[in-house]
Length: 190
Image (cartoon, one colour):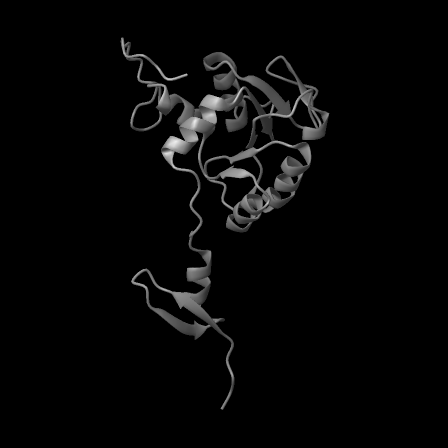
């Protein structure tokens, strides 16, 4: 009899089973997301308590999402916004910094625009900087990095756009994420 490496899979119904580690099903189950970040109320609390945000991977290219998010944060919030890009001197009229250690203060939130494979090294840089929250942008997912960050005491938000979340909590979003243009007398949450 040939021994086959197996993995134990825990199913949503509470049962578990062993399947061959090399099977396509094992690979699919391993790739599925099981980590859950902060709830909407917790994300609102993060945004409310923050005074400064550093954007790691900020770009001076106006076609990049980090540029758009930086523009939004500068124009629509009271946050002190810092841009981190070792290849730029200035972004949106503000000094660009080569790394988090070069910032004039420890940011409350580090907003990350880097590929998923870069997230573990960014988490290490965030920890070294003393920042307490890392916010990884929409479309970027690295579960192991999220779990690692949390194990080191970080608050981790992943696969969420800080601009969309901020606008949503402040009444400025349409279902699809665009500014509604609606004028309201409803008090906004700052």
